Image (cartoon, rainbow, N blue to C red; front, top):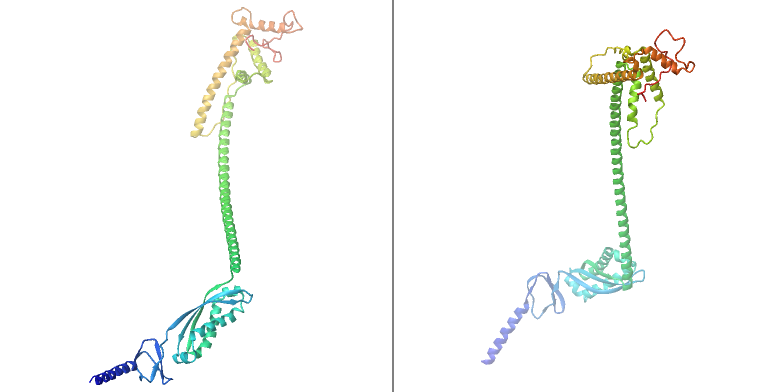
Length: 413
């Protein structure tokens, strides 16, 4: 009884184990190689699969996804005999599980060694500079060689990347110095270009400023010259009008030599005025003025005391002028004022002449001697040829000769 139960239990256990060994579940992107009695039978795809237990053997599943493998740094010698360390990264994918299982024993190791040898062949034909700057060409060359070699293994190499290229320490120092010098050179060039551009812009700004300043100065000079010209024109016109007015007033008043001499004598004290006038220079025309005034006084003395003050010749009538405007009316009013001043000066001259005559001929006012005898006596005393008194043959006329000098009056200077 107990033996039968044990046998029944063993049978049930065997059946369960057989069922478990015959049913296989393959995940997605996986593949299984089935060997029947040691030979390849089939490839299991993803899903639920049934195999013959104890006859079929399923090898470890193969990953069909793209895989990434990073290889350790490998020393590589460049064309210029420099040893550099290169890290590579490989991207591959199993396309044929049967070939990957039976064509190569360890495809990962095979790909690594193939990558190293191919990399040394490629880098051996390049120098350090080309190695550092030609990564894309190196990657392309590696991928082509690896793809051709791994195609029969059921593996497709999608991409090969150089992760790092490390030259020796001394080469790195030299490269850093070269890079620093290159950057310094570029910085110096950029700084010089900046200074040049700044100098050019500054010069252009100064040139435009100078041009504008010169244009402004030129316009200012032109405007100033125009203003000066107009001012000079107006000043000349005013002086011309003033000269015309004075000239007309003088000709309208018709002054004689006596009035001019008297005015000249009146101007002498004004010439001597001022604290700074230490020396008074008497002009040469003073003798002529005194001579003219003395001749007038002599004529008055020869004509007698009853003759009265001499009268100035009548003024010549001014030529007819057109109807004046407002400015001409003002000018005419000024002329009237000037004429009035001249008339007052003429009256003063006549009064001075009368006083000089009175002082020179006292007999004419109450001394009892006639004016003619006094004049004759004066002439006799002044004549050196007849010291006894008077000319024995006097002229029938009582007027003095024009060429005879007349002594100045006592009050005249």
